[in-house]
Structures are given as C-alpha cells and as structure tokens.
Image (cartoon, rainbow, N blue to C red; front, side):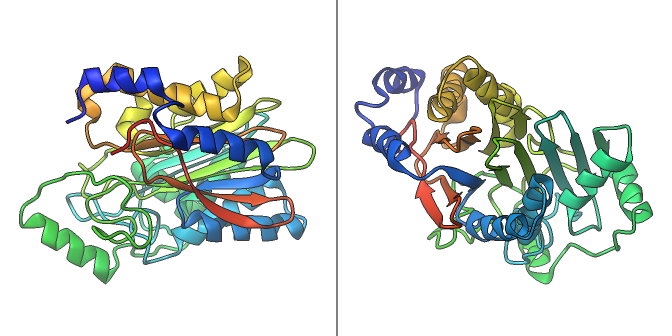
Length: 336
C-alpha cells in the first residue's frame, strides 16, 4: 500500500534510491536536441506525421495538428478519437486543445460525432473569439465548419461498453495505453488517457496539442484535464511547453502543465520541473493516489526534454532534428 509515509520517503530519496531518475538526467545531457515529443508509445507514429508536415513547410500548429490526427483516426486506439470508449450512457465524447506560444489557443470538450477534435479545436482558435466550446455547441460548431458527422462508437468499443454494463464498475489501470500490455489492450477499457504533443522549430518557437476520448465509461459530461489550458497543456514563448497524461482529475487539481512551465520560467530544467509537480501531487494527495498514474512531459526552446511520472510504465516518443524517433521510459517517483 502507498502510504503518506511511503510518499514522503520517496520524496526524500528521489535520484538516490530510484536509479531511473539519474539515468534519465544523464541521457538528457547527451541526447540530440528534440524537435517533437509526445506521450506514450503510440506517439511515435504521431511524431512521424508531425515531422513530415514540418519538412513539407507546415507551421508548428500544422505539425502538432497532423500528429494528433494519427491516433484520433485509429480505431484500435481506445483512448483517443474514433474507436474511443464511450461514457456510461454509450456516447463517445472527445476533448482537445491546441496552443501556440503567443497565447493562441482553442479547445473543445464533450464533442460528439466528429473524428478530429484537434482540428475543431484549431478552428475555435482561428475562427471564433473564444478559447473553449463544449457539448452540443461544440458539435454544432463542427458541423458549421464542414466537419462530417461520423458515428464514433465502433463495434469493438460498443462490445466493451456492453460488457462493462454488466457490473458498471470503474477501476483505473495504470499504463494500459501501451501496446503489448499483458493486462489490457492499448487504451484499455479500464483506463483513461490522451496523447499530448509538443513541437519546436530551430528558432525556439513552440506549439502543442492534446486530444482524448477521456475516461472510459465516465459520467456523461465529465471533462478531464486534456482540453483545459494549464492542466493538460501549456506553452509559453521563450520558456517551454508541457503536457500531461494519466488520471486527469489529479492533474487538474494542481494546474499541472502550467505549474511545470512556471517552474521552467523560474529556472528549473524541463526534467526538474516535471519531477517537482509529480512530487507535489504525491505529497498533496497521499493515500488517494494509490495505484494512480500521472505523468508529465516537457520541452524547452533549446530542445531539452523532461519526463516524470508517479508509477513506472509511462513512455514517451522523442524525435530529433534529423527525424530520428525513439520511445523512452520515463523515470518514476515510485517503483510500483
């Protein structure tokens, strides 16, 4: 059991008793500068799409949008977009946000019948005076902008939902997003997740995107951290960007991504900033975070990367300026 005493002990020995953290810092010092980073192993395909868009002359917003669209259109990914698991009433609802480092931001929440929530979020940013549109209004806006109506509930997702209805119990399982999980398929029915992407150009400008179908079998109307600026995503010129993953309620409580960027503004490296917010969540929440995964990923204008999480298992994809992509394990506060 993860007790408050365990939490405080972990906070005191991080970097000593947890060799992953030391290894990650050493790796960060020797790795080539990153151009694009994203959460989870399926972020590798998203990074490749983002890199291709940049090489073709696209902007940073074009790149992060193109990257986010990859998992959104993948029916095998049950935590993002088409094929995402529905809420407890059988409705697939999507949340997304896109942001540049000049304060441009657009977001949607509880969007229905639309595959590419990230693209609708960008239209909010570029075509409206608002930053966030939700529910029926978001869906109507998508239709008005020419996005086709698509039934997002795939046969596989519907089967999982009907199986869940037999017991109607919800228990998050950490890290089930990763392909090859022995417990659940990627983005499995008992989990919750998103993909967050951050990209920079050689001049140090930044942009980010975050998109999700949210917590499987959630209460209708539930919105997690993903579309909330400062929680699921935050980007600031000259400082850096951050995105989050895992149980959104725990991220929202502390405005997690904004906190990471604020720490970077105060002089912490991306890695140290990610560690700071995870330790803060652990100290704040104690026993309430037993078995819960929360992770953060950060990128600064120089291409330095930070990643840290509560539990082992969070992975992230890093693409350098040559287009080489690696999937790496993030160091964690706890061993299990």
